[in-house]
Length: 190
Image (cartoon, rainbow, N blue to C red; front, side, top):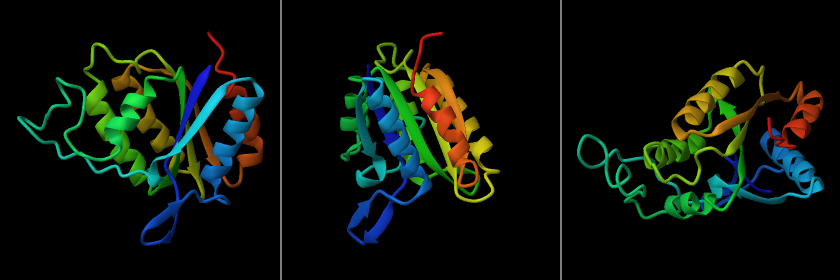
């Protein structure tokens, strides 16, 4: 099985450079997922969206719909269309975001806003029906993980994907949640 991991966290090293926060909770979850998926014989790729140029949705065109509604592409010239098209090469997705202020990260919201616009009404979607695992990583108390996972439920609804697992992770429960993450990476059929 081919699995794409999209993560939405990074450290800013300087004004021009973003790298994944290799000591952070989100990246720890990425590593755990990659290790388990590869150990099960899957082909795995990871894209850190924060390292890509993804602009916010402009809600352009008539009634806020640009070419995304009919052509299922975005008019903006950034990395979004390339990643969106690339997603169709995978059988399943793992979305991993930090939780900021009880929500998914800004880069996750930006990417998923545009993904919903391009794919939610796409009768020929290559994403619909595929399994997703959603992981919300909170560095604090973890109270925002449920709100973030609810946002993933909404994404799942509009994309027509199959929610395989929704996993809340905090610094306090990460070791315990490793087992839950490892189990979810099996992506077994129902």
